[in-house]
Each structure stands twice: as structure tokens, then as C-alpha cells.
Image (cartoon, rainbow over all chains, first blue to last red; front, side, top):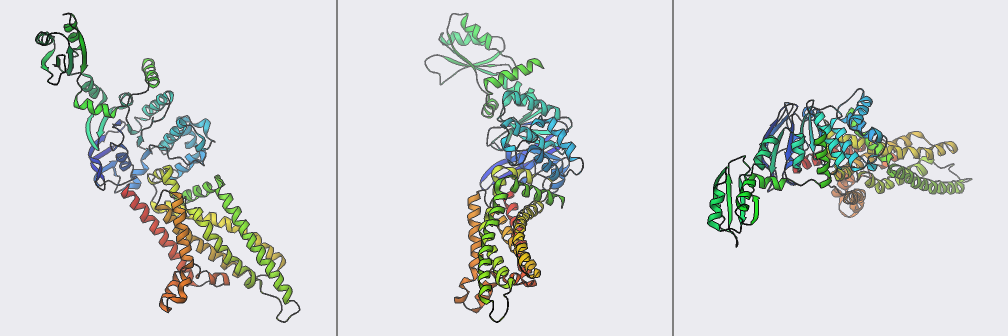
Length: 324
Length: 254
């Protein structure tokens, strides 16, 4: 449904998007994960026909966004980072206007009513957009994106700035929209991806650094392959003790270690040996002063792209998961 | 065409959903009314003096309406930068330009819609002044044809200013910058032929052609000269064309 092929975008000497390729199958949700300034918005703007790419091509529903922009745009709904609302219009006026310029001709009134209901903004129908809360603005933005029932939805950080309840509602809505719509959404929140998306593209400094399903990525992240262990026990004996732990494939002494002996312990992929390592040290009467997984390079990327959700939001999300 | 009308309607509603439209129309009417009053008072005194003398009554069209319409163009010079300075600058600032540029409509439709919306606002401003003309018809017998050509001239000249203002607005996301540049360019086009007396005959002719006011004189006198119509129409076309190029280049620069 969406094909992005070796897309690059340069602003003068700055390369915002560098040889990005990915594809999204019909009905899927693709999560576009990356830190601010990674090129997420630029890629989305190219995909929606807002700006042309420097090289490469992108097709939406079979139409090249540069060669056949009108056909591609008819089939694309776009929610930019800031919802593009006209402050002086009421929600109803605004959505009616959008419906017109998106090419709807008949039954505009019914369609506007249906979409307002779907995005829970019907109670604000006659309020001016300027007077809406952030959450409502975002939802009206979502409403304008789906008003012409496009095949493809491009959502730039759809949950940014919402409160936890609204985040859950918005994610729910996005999941509902998938299936009939193909969705690309960008975010810098990791849990959001694992909860809503079937595929993830991680982008950093304009390049795709990983592309997989959230499960596989999470697995690659959390399967702690290397663990740092620091103990005040005798170095040689400690190393031997660590080596004997089931699942450990190698132990190295950290050359940069300070006063206390520090080891890098490799283990089999997928096996979490931290508990056993701790036991090996502690049962011998030594002190365990440090035990932490060594971050992989991919995880490094993940860290830069991941912002922690606030405690409140995380709690709400957990609750949602528990209820599901 | 439907898209053009949708955009034009949105623009026009935008003016009147905020105080902008009412303030512009209201104060235009106030200024026009003041010019009207002074000219009528002046005309009144002149007529009194002429009474009893040879030559009969004065010509309302020549003595009153023609200078009144000339004065109306001065208001345009001051008010139009205020209309156009927000057209693109505001859309860029608020991000709504992303909605327009990602909708299945062409740049030309967007620009044309914005132009017609602004022109419709100007037409609303002019419509109010028809009241003043109505007063003249109640108490005098002016010719209606020179009035009609005068209004046509105002619309054409207004269209020229609006298309140029639209272009300047498309260059920046700052309304004040757009407003100031627009006003300066308007004023330059206004006074460009003031130097014509000391620049020699060739330059004088060229500057005369460029001057946006000189082309209006005939309309105020009741003459529709295709030369002037072509001038204004090509001015409008150029303004819209430049706006299109500006919007397009903005796309590439991002």
C-alpha cells in the first residue's frame, strides 16, 4: 500500500533523510520511531506530498506522490505534528471545509457528523477551534485526516501532548482504524509502538537503523547478552565462579575497572543469567557491588529514541493492558 | 472550480469570523464617508457661488464623483497591506498550510481561492460606498455610467494590489514583514511617476506605464480603455503567477 524506495531529502548541505526504504502492507500499522530531528516528519511530509524528495520515490496506493500528486493525496489522510486547525472556525465548519477540499461532494454533512462521533468531538461541534483543549485539537486533527476515508493515514506523533486517558483512547481509535486503513505513525515513545504497531522502523539521523516487528525488536533489546559484574571478592576466584554459571559463554576482565575487579560476562542469546550471577557471588560471601546489563549498540539507539513515559501514563497503560 | 470556491469561502468567512472583516469594512466606510462629506460640502459651496452666474450648474460627476473615487484609491493603498499580509503568513505560522498543500487541490486553486476571497472582501467594502452614491442620486442627477466604470477601475486596481500583496505574503511567515514590504511596494508603484518631470521623455513614458494610479484616471473619468484593462489584468496575472512560483519554491526548500 505504501512503498518508500531509497528516499533522500537534503536541505543544502544538511541531509535530513538518507536513503530510506520501507513498505507497509495494506491494513498494517507501521510505527516510525526515532528521536526528534531524526527525519520522521520530513519522511512523512514527502509521503503526503507536502514537499518533494531530493531523490528516490514513494508511492501511496499505487500512485507516485510526485508524479501523480492529486491521486495520491486523495487517498492519504495526514495529521501533522500540530493539528492544522483554523482558530476562527468551529469544529463543524472546519471539518466541512476540509471535506470539500479533500474532494467530497455529496453527503458532507452526514460524513462530518459520523467522523465527529467517531473521534469523540461531537460535543464540541460548535465550539471554535481556538477554544479547544489540546486533546480535542488533536482529535479534531485526527477527524480531518479520516474525513475522506483515505486508504492511507499518516499520523505525526498522534498522542503527543495528550493526557493518559486520551492517549489510550487515541491508540484505541488508531487500532480500530487499521484494517480498513493503512497507517504510518511516528512517535518517540517505545511502549506506544509495541502497543499499536505491527511493524517498526527505527530511524536515526535520517537513516533506517532497524526494521522489524515490535516483538522481535523488544526481544533483541531485552535479551541481555552481556552483563557487567563488579564484586569485592578475590579477582581470580570470582572469575572462575562466574564462568561456572549455567549459560555463561565467556568472562572478560574489564581493563578500565577501578579499584574493584569488574567483569564483562557474555551469555547465550535470550538467556537471562543475572539472577544466577548474583547468586554465584553472594553465596560465596563476597559483596556484589554492581550488576547491570551492558547495552548493545541497538539498545543504545533505542535509548536515544526512547523517552520514558511519565509515571502516571505508564500506570494508566498498565491498567489498560490488565483490562484488555 | 469547486475547490477555488471552497477556499474563497473559507477566506471570506475567516475575515468575518474575526473582527478583521468588520473593522476593515467599517473603517473603510468611515474614511470614505469623510471624503464624501468634504467633497460634497466643497461642491455645495461652489454651486452656491455659481448660482446666478453664467454657465449654469456644475457637473456632479466631474466635480464630485471622480475626485471621490480617486480618494478611495488612497484608502486602498493603506488598507490593502492589512488584508493581504496574513493570507499566507498566517497559514504558514499556524501550520494550516500543511493541510492545504497535502489536500488534493492544486497550488493554483489555493492561490485563486485566496485571491477571490480577498477580492470579495474588497467588493464588500465597495458595496458600502454605494450608499453614498445613492444619496447623490436622491438629491442630484449624476450620470451612472462613469460611476460604473469608476467602480470597475477600483476593482481592477484593487485586484492588482491584492495579487501583489498575496505574492509578498507568500514570501514570509511574519505578518509584520509582509505588511511593511507590501505597503512599501504599493507606495513605490503609487509615486513611481512623480520623478517623470526630471528623467527625460523616454523614462517618463515608461514610468507612466508602470504607475498604478495613472491607469486609473480614465476609469474615474468614465472611459474604459482596453490599454488600462490589459495593464491591470496582466498585473493581476503576474502577481498570481509569482505567488505560484513562490509557493512551489517553498515546497522544494521545505
